[in-house]
Image: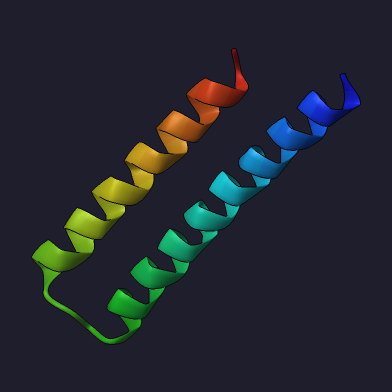
Length: 59
Protein backbone atom coordinates (compact mmCIF):
# COMPACT_ATOMS: atom_id res chain seq x y z
CA UNK A 1 0.00 0.00 0.00
CA UNK A 2 2.82 2.41 0.85
CA UNK A 3 4.56 1.62 -2.43
CA UNK A 4 1.41 2.44 -4.41
CA UNK A 5 0.99 5.70 -2.53
CA UNK A 6 4.65 6.58 -3.09
CA UNK A 7 4.35 5.81 -6.78
CA UNK A 8 1.22 7.94 -7.08
CA UNK A 9 2.95 10.82 -5.28
CA UNK A 10 5.90 10.50 -7.66
CA UNK A 11 3.65 10.87 -10.70
CA UNK A 12 1.70 13.76 -9.14
CA UNK A 13 4.95 15.56 -8.35
CA UNK A 14 6.25 14.87 -11.86
CA UNK A 15 3.10 16.33 -13.45
CA UNK A 16 3.23 19.31 -11.10
CA UNK A 17 6.85 19.91 -12.15
CA UNK A 18 5.81 19.78 -15.82
CA UNK A 19 3.19 22.45 -15.15
CA UNK A 20 5.76 24.66 -13.42
CA UNK A 21 8.04 24.28 -16.44
CA UNK A 22 5.18 25.30 -18.74
CA UNK A 23 4.50 28.33 -16.55
CA UNK A 24 8.13 29.39 -16.78
CA UNK A 25 8.02 28.95 -20.55
CA UNK A 26 5.00 31.27 -20.78
CA UNK A 27 6.74 33.83 -18.57
CA UNK A 28 9.79 33.77 -20.81
CA UNK A 29 7.66 34.26 -23.92
CA UNK A 30 6.05 37.29 -22.30
CA UNK A 31 9.37 38.72 -21.15
CA UNK A 32 10.83 38.24 -24.62
CA UNK A 33 7.75 39.94 -26.08
CA UNK A 34 7.10 37.06 -28.42
CA UNK A 35 4.25 36.95 -30.91
CA UNK A 36 0.85 37.21 -29.20
CA UNK A 37 -0.40 34.08 -30.96
CA UNK A 38 2.55 32.08 -29.60
CA UNK A 39 1.89 33.33 -26.06
CA UNK A 40 -1.83 32.57 -26.36
CA UNK A 41 -1.16 29.05 -27.62
CA UNK A 42 1.22 28.43 -24.71
CA UNK A 43 -1.33 29.75 -22.22
CA UNK A 44 -3.98 27.43 -23.66
CA UNK A 45 -1.66 24.44 -23.30
CA UNK A 46 -0.87 25.47 -19.73
CA UNK A 47 -4.56 25.76 -18.90
CA UNK A 48 -5.25 22.32 -20.38
CA UNK A 49 -2.45 20.84 -18.27
CA UNK A 50 -3.85 22.46 -15.10
CA UNK A 51 -7.37 21.21 -15.83
CA UNK A 52 -6.12 17.67 -16.46
CA UNK A 53 -4.00 17.78 -13.30
CA UNK A 54 -6.93 19.02 -11.18
CA UNK A 55 -9.28 16.44 -12.68
CA UNK A 56 -6.90 13.56 -11.97
CA UNK A 57 -6.28 14.69 -8.38
CA UNK A 58 -9.97 15.13 -7.56
CA UNK A 59 -10.89 11.54 -8.44
